[in-house]
Image 1 (cartoon, rainbow, N blue to C red):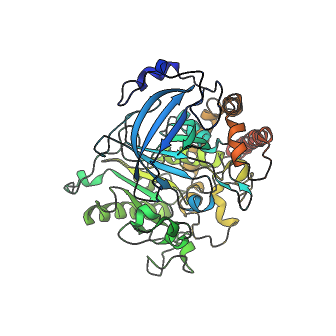
Image 2 (image 1 turned 120 degrees about the horizontal axis):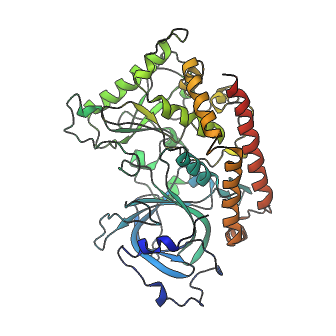
Image 3 (image 1 turned 90 degrees about the vertical axis):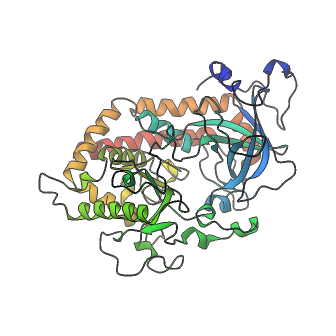
Amino acid sequence: MKRYAPILLLFFLFACQRDPVDEPMDENPFDVETGTSEIPYIIIETGGVDILNEPKIPAEMKLYLQKAEVQHARIGIEYRGSTSFRLSDKKSYGIETRDMDGNDVDVSFFGFPLEEDWILMGHIVNLGQGYIFDRTLMYHYLGYELFRKMGRYASRSEFVELELNGEYQGVYIFMEKLKQDRNRIDVSDLGPADITPDAISGGYILKIDKTAGGDLNIDQPLEYFENNWDDDARYSPDISFRSRYDIYGRVLGFEPFGPPYHSNQYLETYFLYEYPKSKDITDAQKAYIQGYIDDFESALLSDDFDAETRTYTDYIDLGTFVDFFIINELCRNVDGYRLSTYLYKDRGGKLSMGPIWDLNIGYDSGDRVPFDDWVINYNNYVSQDAWMMPFWWPRLMEDPIFRSALKVRWEELRAGVLSTQELLGLVDRTAGYLKDNGAVRRNYNLWDAGLMVDYDASIGSLKSFLEQRAGWMDGEISSF
């Protein structure tokens, strides 16, 4: 794992710097004793004000390396997540950096590019029911690292330990929030005046996902969000549009935007407006991106895969679809494709898939789909989930051109960044970093959930899964 001496200088370039030599190195400023741990430690203080689902409340954040304060920032903080917020006692947080007047301000952490929006992601722990998602603490981190190694953007991430209002919270991942930005999802600015044929073509970011408080602009007390399951499926034309086709590629024969969890919802696929935001996107821009998606879907369904030519490839960047398939399948991300799925289209460009997002029930825990089948076959194992697999992926897998591109890319990656040696080495290095610095022990002293977590066994299970999964994919793809 990385060491932080080379990037310390970067921390001192931003507001509210502190000289680490002024901090007493032999005293413990934290709620827990971290010894000589090299893992960054974050302290957030809200001044006694309760954190809300939204809006963000003002707070102070201090970043320490080996007990020396190296960065101090004013922030706004709120809870994040919908299902995870309800399920987990270990909450995740969205934060934005602010100036003295409370205005958003771009700041760099860990040498990441300057930005204002960040996430502190915790793994899901339910103490009452005694279960934990991702006992390795690395599912998100691992997937994002692999996707970047494949040459694609994924949220830059760093392990930290978090203390909130004087109480230790455990191991978290500090990561970039996915958003339109030249250093994140790099698509062109699209304003209300961009309506000429060239300008209106981009950039757009869409998401296939549940709806949530931020999408719906719900103003309710925190208690409301603890049980608002219906709001996960409350689609409307203000925030989304529906595919004209069902999950089998048939034209839908009923009206969109029905009540949450209606009997035919499993047949629908909705696209949420991520950028421009739903409050900013114009009717003309909605019509453009809806029409573009419909044209792609119609072409994908109508193309003759026995012929030499395709029309659906006029609408998509095939390479991004291939890489998105590979990372979701390797990680057995059973939420992939149908939830937490990002798509983007730049000005003058084609529709692209990615970045990868939200892997907390993948890998050896993603057992809704067996390890020796494709995640895109999710609909064969789960009946009438409110969020099923869109028809795109099984249809693409029928195409010899898609399979050929997949085979070439997979063989290239398996000879390099996705080789078994590289996969297992990344797991070992990450686990060693967390264990050797005592973070695993400290985290599970707090979040064991009565399950007596065997971290070494969890790492062994993850490595075994990756080796078997990659080997199975080798066999399947080699036959294409």
